[in-house]
Length: 154
Image (cartoon, rainbow, N blue to C red):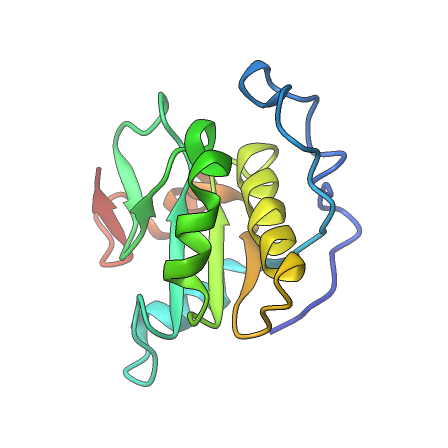
């Protein structure tokens, strides 16, 4: 898996202006790497990796969580993510790869991934790392379809 930030992808700090729900929260400092859809597909389909053990997929949508999630994804809305971060870190700290996404990964997904990586860095935790899904759920459904074994109903 590539650990570089792609030049055409927004960084968490430039992804979007600060939304109203996040103005009182600290600005993200980390710049987690992006992960391609095909890499996530391989993780989901592989018999050598198990969701919740080897990787975790986190959907951070709230109001726009309407139809589809990535297969195996858990929903933790961005609007309450930072407040629950200490608990999430204690639960997820031994999952090697935590993959975040939102609608198109232009704001909430990168912001939450950065906060998670910031929290790991603050505690010198190296057993887990944040990644951001390229294109978010919109690109995922466009690529794999609504009835694929890689998509689940919300």
